[in-house]
Amino acid sequence: MCGIVGYVGNQKVSNLLINGLKRMEYRGYDSAGISVLQDGKIQTIKKSGKVSQLEKLVDHTLYDSTIGIAHTRWATHGEPNDINAHPHHSSDDKISIVHNGIIENYAAIKKNLQEKGYTFRSETDSEVLAVMIQAIYEKVQCLEEAVRFALNEVDGTFGLLVLSSHEPDRIIAARRGSPMVLGIGDGEYIVASDASAIIQHTRQVVYLNDNEMAIIKRDGFETKTIMNEATTTHIQEIEFDLEHIEKAGYEHFMLKEIFEQPETFRDAFRGRLLADKGNVKLGGLTQVQEKLRQAKRIIITACGTSWHSALVGEYIIENLAQIPVEVEYASEFRYRNTPLYPDDIVIAISQSGETADTLAAVYETKQKGATPIGIVNVVGSSIARETEAGIYIHAGPEIGVASTKAFTSQISVLTILALYLGRMRNLSQSDGKRIAAEILEIPDKIRRILNRSDEIKALAKKQAKSRNYLYLGRGYNFPVALEGALKMKEISYIHAEGYPAAEMKHGPIALIDENMPVVIVATKDEIYEKVISNIQEVRARKGKVIAIATEGDENIKDYANHVIYIPSTLPMLTPVLAVIPLQLIAYYTAVELGCNVDQPRNLAKSVTVE
Image (cartoon, rainbow, N blue to C red):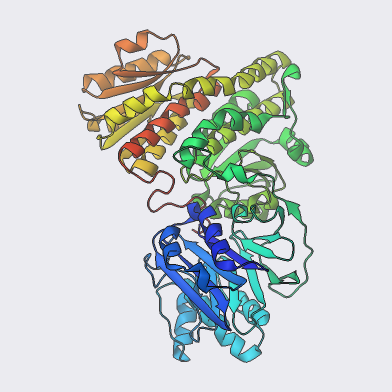
């Protein structure tokens, strides 16, 4: 969700913080603000809109401060305006905070503080925390203690930085349910909600744990729990390079990330796929290998695009490993009394590794005694640390809010996981070799599709004025239909629905007319003829059919208005290829409509609040 950054060191802070916010703007871009300590006072500037709007107001020559905090917001409590933008101050303006998360009991705390004479300027829950810290500080006269006592009183989640003119040599950071990373430089420290704001300054980082604080000064830092228990820090190294979070000549991050997929799909299985043995080596699962061998059921939980990759994974795992798989929305998982048993495996999928609902599902899994496994992209993320074992997808930073390369990397990992489980059970070595050989060919086949992007661009431009889309698929490609529709909705704001093709006649067919483009994944497989029948049903209602078809299939031209060809592969691997044209259709449609592709309205990259 929101982007947070703070700095203590020897550099002038305002430009450094603004650049940090730009690196994290994909986490939220409703409003932005900055607080620095200058001449013994907190100076704050904040503005609704993008970070660029804030930057216009910040005259860097006015500030020679070397300590400060900043924030780019995705609104939860209170509309995105100047007043509700972060940072928020205490009533006496001597404490400033930036906060990611939700304070669930803020209303009761606010009422109590108002009765004691404290005043508020905004509608946010975050300001309540700032004023609460002030009220406690007035009693204890110690910023660290005031923050600690306040955090023990609040219900909810927080990624928090606190700056105060009372103690101008330090920043206090804390986290519960929202990421916080401390970068350790040469005589300087930069703390942020995302490593992308840190990589320019240092690779050495410490990931704070839930309910942990860091007291950061110019000459060092210490960590402890919010219960005042000392903690041990583990310094890790950021794995990605700065160029991974640059556009590299592409117009948008999303387009860059779409075109990175030949490499990122390969990176997800590199060093893991033992093609000559028809097997897979997954070191991250070693400690749960026997549990996986004995598992009678797998539950996969995720949100959004990750939920769609989970559906693909369900089909592949059940096919290769013959283990029953259920896919659950993480947002619903913990609010039902889901039966879990000690021999159940729960796989949590999240690009960021910080998705609040998915993380909560992991906690629920542990509470009920089942085995949680993580499939995440971000090293050191909460889900990576809270699960018993897991697999990193190694997709590199994904900056575009609409996920693309993470989706195909997740499918890559789920496919080799299915092969791994299948070879543990009844899948033969010859079948394993055949599947592995096909997996190795996928990156080049993705590249062949991308080489025809101009053809897809022309089609998207022609259809851009359509206000509704229907996406259809069957079998492995039903989740692709869901994902294609989601991409169209996310970045072009066109209404789109994904449906199993056979279910169309049970309702959605009523929507079809000459103005309705219908995108159908109609690749050559065992249910190809069934899909052709579904296409004929659409054409009988004058719908415009855009077919994703297998190279060499000339028959499809008799039924579809437009055909986009993809290379032939195993049916279970078709989703990785079929989704590429759908990503490009959504992208080029959004560009044609003048939409902000990388920062679509109302969305943020990582949903760290409910």
